[in-house]
Amino acid sequence: MGELAVGRPALQLNARVSLPLDLVSVTSLLYRAVPGSGLDRWLIAARRGLSEALRADLDLLNGFSGRWLYYLEEPIMRFEPLRPDRLDASFDDLMAFLERLPADHYRSMVARALARVHDDLNTGMTAPSFGDVEGWRAYLEPALTTATAGDVLTLLADPAQLKARTIGLFRGIWDEVYAQEYAERLPVLREAAALAASSAVGGFGPTFSELTGNRLPSSLVAGLNDVESVTFCPSYHLGTFISYVLYPPDLVVFFGAPEFLARIRPSALPNGASATATPAHREQGLATEDLLEALRALGDPNRLRVIDLLFRGELYAQEIVGRLGIAQSAVSRHLSLLERAGLIKVRPHGGKRYYAVDCERLEAVAAAIRCRGRQG
Image 1 (cartoon, rainbow, N blue to C red):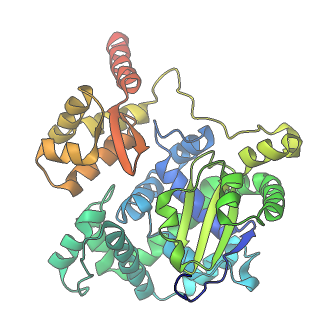
Image 2 (cartoon, helix red, strand yellow):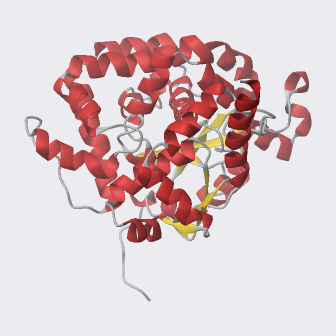
């Protein structure tokens, strides 16, 4: 007989539609919706349809809390969307709450998001005082992807601007591309949530697999110790990807609503909707904006060296760091920019991310340049 141990209550499993949670999910998807991402066509087109200023803020506010995109989770989870009286919160309810929060709270949310990044990276670093500019520059460095330390430091020095741009990003995405889309997809989301609720009875692992169509990732298992409640939220545009918000004591797991409905009840999709989210098929030509993004990504000697290395074969990040001889944080930024431009592909395996050149995309870039030459 083993030792006596203090028991832990079983996880509470729920499934429901939440506008605030869906909004933070689609915001993260729009950030990732670049050529070569594998995300669906609506996301690619919606990102392209955002105003230039809004796309810049999307990249900035998602670009300083690592690949986990922790910062924009903070204001949404601060709203407590799973609280009983907020389960049916509207967009206006969320905005009113965010407007009421003092500006300094947004700076604290940055600090919390970065603390989560450093916990994940096991750096042992702690946040400096807000007046320590160089300390903050060093603290930001491991977490930067599509933002620069200077841009983030500017926001930290002006919490009112940080608050305005954070709220403005959510409001801009809602107004410019998502309000109508959410209204149109809401019946499918509700149908998926209702059916998912009846499935959430067999324990977390089996329910996760049934709803997402994926095996439970080890990275998520490791974070369950502090979780008391799991809420499964349907997403129309997630597809077969895995996405979650781990914010103890809550865990929110997103699952592809059309894919789930297609697996268990194909006839449940209304109005002839597709059984799967639309894949991001490659376009016949390369849009001017995509060409410019690719050329900007190639316009750096270190990124060209990364491409040269990957032409010789697939490598994981640490191998690239070793061969380039530059800081890991810098390599991460270079890889992120190349990935966002669709010039490299990423294959997760065994807890590592393996990178390879997307030769088809590079050929499309070359073809677009040749075509412009012929037109001239």
